[in-house]
Image 1 (cartoon, one colour):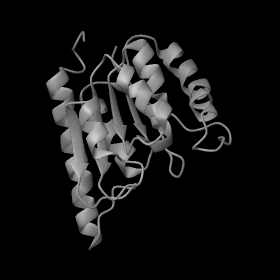
Image 2 (cartoon, helix red, strand yellow; image 1 turned 120 degrees about the vertical axis):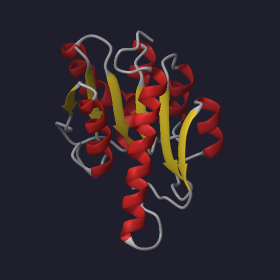
Image 3 (cartoon, one colour; image 1 turned 60 degrees about the horizontal axis):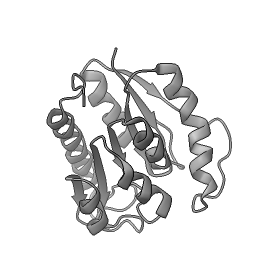
Length: 181
């Protein structure tokens, strides 16, 4: 069985558009999608203990599922990069917290492929670092941490479409879900 774990950010749950559609891409490929919601108040987002807090929430879910799940996380959820690195899990990281050293370090330790998605107007996005960490990068000019761009809302909806396409292409490239890598 193929599984995907959707790990939310701090502001919106797993049904927020970026996460919902990224999870839907996995579901359309036959995966069982597990959409996690935080069970308790999280610590300060910019402190190292946030990584172990996220681990405490996500490790039991990944253990219960077993196998080699795809992780899909946004912002706060990208603190699960250490789990992906340790378990050799492929991942899609939406608006990753690249300015947090422990997230960047975990991404640097990863052996499974991962997609990084961010915008140039996001304070936690680092374009150069993203490209050094992964050959799979979608960078949207002018997009903020919510992947909104200036102008009419339809422009931000178009960004959502770009993200869905990037996830589809990434999963095609790595041969997921049937890949043994």
